[in-house]
Every structure is written in C-alpha cells, then in structure tokens.
Figure: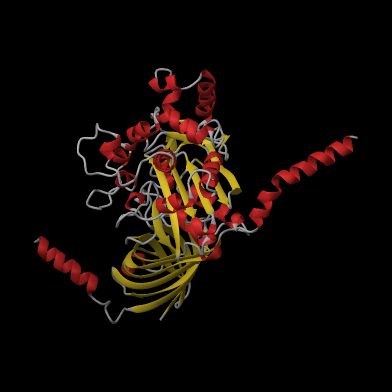
Length: 349
Length: 197
C-alpha cells in the first residue's frame, strides 16, 4: 500500500511539472540561467526573481540570490517586489479593458472629458498613455501618466486601488499582489476600500516582500528605504513574477483585451517610442514590447514581450541594477540593457 | 632656471645612450598577473592569478636612462575554474614603450642593477562567451609603472626581476558594472633571462 502511495505521488508530481519540463527543453533556459546569475552578481543585485512565459504558460521560473541578505532568505518566483512604473502596463490594460472596450471612452478623448480638474485641455487619453505631447513629441513622464488615475476612477466608477484589485488582481488570481504598498500602513486612507480579510492578505504579502538595497561603488549592498507608495496609474503595485505571469497570459489569450485593442496598445503612437502603456521597439527583426520600473537605490523591474513568439520575460529585483544607471530606458531603447540583450540573443536570435 | 632644468631633463630622456657603452638587452620572461580589477564584463569568477609571458627589448647604457619595448601576454585572464563556465577564451595582451631609469653602472658595478620603469602603450582585452554573447573586444590606451633589477651571471646572460602595474586609461565601449574600478588594471610580477649584445 505504501509503495502504491509513493508511486501515486511520483506520478502526480511528474504530471504537475511535466509541462514546464517540456517547455524548458525547447528553450535555451540553462544557458540563460547562467548568464542571468552572472549578470546579477556583476551588477551587485542582491535578489532577482525571473520567469519566462511561453504560449500562456510559465516555461521557466527561478529565484537568484537573496530577498533578504541579512536573513539569508532566498529570492523565489513567489517573492513580492514593488514593481514601480511597470504598474503602467496594468493601468493601461485596465483602462482599455474597462473604459474603452466596456464603456464609451475613446483614446482620442480629451482628458478633460473624464477629469475636469485637469487645468489645460488639448491632451488626449492616448497621449497620456503613450507619454506623448499634443504636438506628438515623446517625453516619458510618470507623473503625467498618473493623471490617468482620476480618468479611470471617473469612467469605471470606483476608487483606483479597489478597481485594480477587483478588475485585475482578484479577477486573475494574482493573490500575491497588492494594490499599493501604503495598504500596509494602518493610517492609509485607502484601507477603507478593502475588507479586513483582504487587508490581512495584503499585510502577509507585504511582510514577505523583498528588502530594498542600494549598491555602493564596489558592488556591495546596504539596506535601502522602502517607501509605502500609494497606488496610482503610474506606480505602486507590489507583485511577484508568478502573478505577473498570470497577467501576461491573460493579456495574450484575450481574457483582458480584444485582439484589436491589444494590437493598438502595441503599436507606436505618432513618432513616439510607445504604444498605449507599453514601449514598442523593433529589435533583431522582430517587434518587442516592454516596460520597466525603477525605484532608485531600492527596486527595479523589467518585462519584455515578443508578441510574434508569444514569449515574455519577467524580471524583478531588489536593487536598481536591472534598469538603473548606466541605462536610460526612459528614452525608449532597450537594446543596450545587458539582461535584455542576453534574453533577445538567446530567445530571438 | 626651471626652464633650463626642464630642457636638460628632456634632453637627458631623449638622448640615445652613448654609443660606446650602449647595449641591447633581450629578456624573455615568465611571471604572474594578479590583483586584477575591471569594469568589463567577466562572466566567471575570473581575474585570478594567471600565468603571463612575454619579452622585452631594451637599449641600456652605463648611465641613468634606457629605453624598452615590452610585449606581455596573459591568457585565460577572465576564465574561472568551472569547466562549464560561460567564458570560452580570453586574454589580455599589452604592448608598451617604456623609459627605464636605472642606477648607473658606476654605482652598481657587478651587482644587481635596479631600475624604475614608466611607459605607455596598448592594452588589448579579449573574451568570448557561450553562444557568442556579449564578447569583450577592448583596445585601451594603457600606462605601466614599476620597478625591477637586472643582474648578470656571465658576460652575456643575466636574470631580470620585474614588478609592474598596468592600467587601462581610455574609455571603452562596454557598459561599466563597477564605477570605482578602472577599465582594466592588474599587477605583473615576472622573472626573465636577459641576454645582452
């Protein structure tokens, strides 16, 4: 009987991991893993969590280094990190899903139609989503993007953190994500939007989040400060690579956006560097869409999608080494980034 | 006065050795490169002590100043000990032209003749990696400074003991990963056999 039980457990385990192993076999993940670990060490990143999603499934995931260096707590695919400006991709998706597809918003609408408190008119929803000015000039400005917070609240009829929680995090089963690090602060006004059960869950996630580190000139980490940022359209989500993989899969399989809307989001607006909430760039003969998050001396994040291959890389780190100086990703070019370069070389060619 | 002194020093440095006492010295050497630091990408636990080899040709006289051309080659400089490491091949090669300030023979006579060396040249750093990713291909202006001593066992043959520090000076293309380190620097300790003509 005991032998039968052991055999059953083995069979179930093989079944559970079979798909991942099969996907790994078709991807150069072993080599990628070694490069990522080497780059992590060289850039002094204490902890890094990574996942590759292919055809809507997690093909590979791994934690490197430590989410807590002092406590020797290893980073895992389930380690939560504040994702910074990467939140813009979820915000743009929420807006397109909830306001454009299910309401009567058009991205060519003047922002003042949805948020009369905006001083000057003449700026469209699409221009805020794509960081372009009314004259068509590209200028990455997270504070300006955050102006979409009130727009979404107006069109969807709710508080922004609650909308993100209901329409994205809970809907997609992103149970290890939090709509705003401020929810861990007992004095946060946003706590009033959530049940005590939800707040307990958020507190548990925030209690496990990776500690932030600043890296000195010799590559050594020292504890940085974790800000309790409230959520807005530009920043504030805390998440894991596993949860972001769920979002990515839902984005690709049409759960969140119609194919036409998604295609529009991944097409450059005017002469800028972005589509709607995503950077759009041609690299190695293929279109890639991507976004990053950067909290100086604390956290960094990077998502790169290769739509034609239904392939996505998700990286979250507890220092700014992924996308911080010397990189300047806000100018719209990803190809100088070493992590991106290795991914694109190995998986795109 | 200072100007005259400067001109005199320049003439001293530039002047060829007195023909009557000048001699060519050829010194093939073996040694070790160590204490390397770099901002270049190093995909393994490399930059350890490595065998280095090379040769120098110098023109010396009985007096203070000599000239030298030196070529040094350090293979496997970016490679660790992992047989499955990402670095497939690597090397650092230096080419330098140097000025030697040696103790005059009148002082050292038949014993070891110490010298200071200072020079400029080219430092080549090369590293190739698995799947051809992110190769290092750097040509850096480099300076070197060091000390040494030469002692002759016979009329023609001697030994040279040499310690130098090499430092790349120029900006390079690779993205720096450490802001405090030079592009590439290392120490080289070597022992050579000196043949004089």
